[in-house]
Image: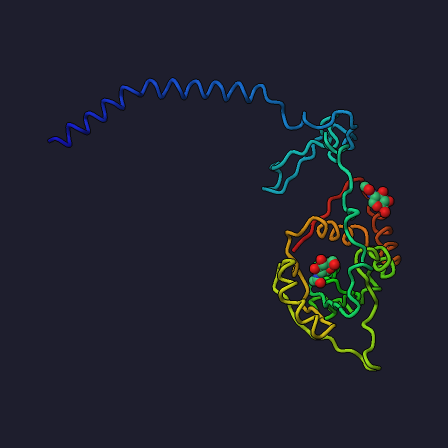
Length: 283
Ligand SMILES: *[C@@H]1O[C@H](CO)[C@@H](O)[C@H](O)[C@H]1NC(C)=O
Ligand SMILES: *[C@@H]1O[C@H](CO)[C@@H](O)[C@H](O)[C@H]1NC(C)=O
């Protein structure tokens, strides 16, 4: 009986605040409506001074991926006159920042004479490229001389190309000379071929992880080959090392001339067919 009365009591209190709740919700709704009315559309935040590249016709391209004959996505071929898909309002403030700061010591000052790092990459070319880039940073962390990385010739692709057939190896070495000393092959030791010690570091190994796991072995054996080297360096690094990563990936790695020529030929052929393309990385 008592509990019934209490429930009744709560119900009555709820009824008395009901108008208040509806009033507050109403005000919120009006505010929201006003805000969405006043806010600019996202498109307006783009620089209106750039002329659009998608400015050819007024047509609407109808994509019929769904049921045949039933348009699914409407892509206005024309776009808005004031919008260039390749630029944004802030793009004039962007600048390259991969150059080393002047506090970043030169490779000559930090490279220890008796430390050699070899790298055996792994996977498809994209994955191997990550390894090649991170190899330079790993050598820098260890103050070691890097031997030009070995490509994975046994992977799924069974591509027998070596580094110098894909990338311009002299450019790789010379453009990074201030950052890391790079040589083409491990020197001989006491007149004999020097077999490095193989080891594998965990994925996403940090700077400290290299110092703790690899450095002691390197100090003892003087030449180490890190195997299956893909994504073996942490994503989060000291800014100067992160910039080095960018210098390798965006400046030091250039395809060889035959590959560049083949690329140009393909682009030329594609351009004869259409103006716009997108690239998809399928996996
Ligand atoms: C970075 O360094 C290169 C080569 O030393 C130089 O040409 C370029 O102007 C520099 N870029 C910036 C943004 O300082
Ligand atoms: C590499 O050299 C720098 C500068 O001399 C030093 O601070 C750092 O501890 C060295 N690191 C290793 C792993 O030898």
